[in-house]
Length: 145
Image 1 (cartoon, rainbow, N blue to C red):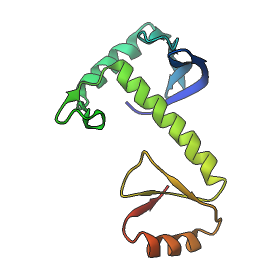
Image 2: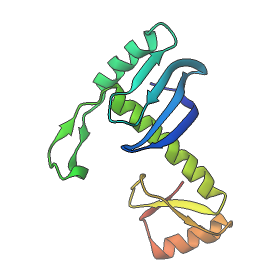
Image 3: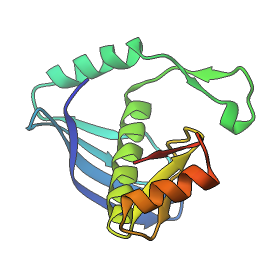
């Protein structure tokens, strides 16, 4: 699925971690309201287009490869992608993009060893200087964001 945008994100703390809600747009059209009350239940999904988008989203999720659970210590275990997992990943990507944009205001942002989930900031505004430093310290191990 292309051109999905999160708008109007609101978050809050709960005794089980935190809740959130947002509107999901596809190609600039509001198609879904997503609400997580933060109390351990399923996401509340309110289709805003009669459910057509949600039908397509379900089909899209079924076409995605399962997610590895190695990070939980469950070697060779996977989990099929459903709408909730897809929306959680979309929200995580959205929040990371906001963090990277904020970090870029402070300097040059980069990752190491292809790990896109972690990033670092050099508090320097000259990209050429940053590249020279990174080439020396982390040859062939970094990527600018």
